[in-house]
Image (tube, rainbow, N blue to C red; front, top):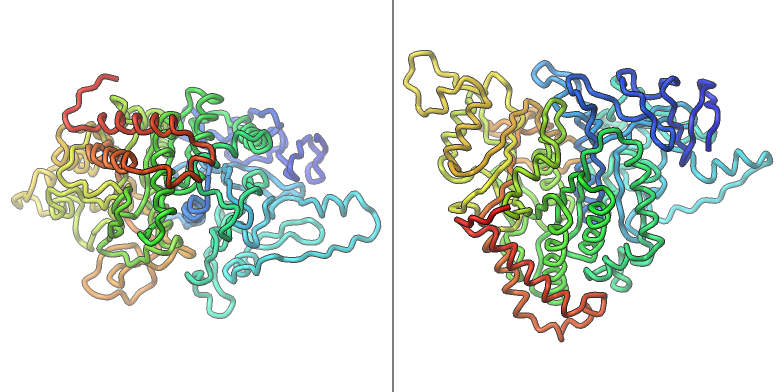
Length: 621
């Protein structure tokens, strides 16, 4: 509904209680130079300096509860990066936040900066978080304005709010009775200051025991159009669960849920000027694999030519004592991967498990991390940190790489599935240079595998995208005194980019490699769990002994996306296990909407996909 802004007196559009000003009202940020207006009358994204095409927006879809855990950490890390102080060694602007975020204003003139996000979860998964969020006017306040008499509100809070969120609200403000969101001043109008307790001003970290759902530690405010609840299934309890692929597919075949998703997609997409694509964070182990499959199909049909990168998420570990859950997990994972691959530009499974199959394997380990693999709060933090690194190429301010370009580079010869790996923190010690560390790593792959596809040692890499971030420029090249014999060819390189490119060439001489070297580290401030060994400094450097200084706040990370021959064995093994199943014992899975023909077609597709990754394969595009 159009109207007049009570703040500026200039034309504006109201939607969901949000005021998005027309260009001359200057509601967008001061450095906005592109003032085009979308269908809803909202300002288009700013065009960042140094990039001719403007901010290349990405819309994120989070589908499922574990996806919510990973997403909560992901957005918390984006928020922490927005709020970090300017440092000469960490110049602002390497990453463009407008790729992931959108601007707006409340009806009372408060500027907002919220994730461009649609998330779907089940009834009972939000705890104390409101589905419509808290930044904009809600239905009760609308009623208060329409009704001039006295208004009495009786409100019952179904779930006790996490103590961490109490501190969050007290630190950042509340929606007052006058409908004004009172926010503590933030110097750069983005991000939130570090949360502290009122007693000792130390960071407040939510305890593992206090985390029930992902909203218990989500630090950012969401737009009213972000949360889409599936009320026909329950998050808690044994009955009414979304546990099979067919159930998830059927959710988006229902007109109500489909229309709601389409409406939210249109809302976000039509305000974008340079939409590069969609990233899907999707549970693979439950029925949300079917939701993700149908969502990717919808995106492919409706937004042809845009990039669609799907991250299939699996929590861990699992037990042999629950055979039905294990069989369902196997089936959901296989159906999800095959269907996501068919409708996406690129697909990457993400898990700390050692295997995708039925046989439990120990979770992966990191030399300087101590985590509990049974806690989604821990596992999702590690996966979100890896995700924050490997997605760097399409979030840079001054890079020609888009989602489509990244997918095209990695997915030649039908290989649309990739594996992920990361070294966190990158093992840098004070006084060492990048060539020193890379030589010490030796010939083995330097990263821990994060796709449950086994050890990458000895496998062939067809194509890879590598990101190294968080190392000061002074340490990019050799620190040896001129005239000193060079330990390796890496020490002769003139720039850090040359060092990294030559190292990758040595590691995988036949692979097509793309690399990025960033000064900006990954932020790991609260509510990120304290997973780090005592031998790390505040900036994640490895010390000779236990640290006596502040807790770790940022870490250097080395991450990769790789089209690897390890997928030949992984996908082939998955198909082999499924072909041995007697589905008559699991009729409930088939009754949820999957037929025998669907299973046979999926197995055939899985076999074909596995063949693409056979070492030495020379398939043409």
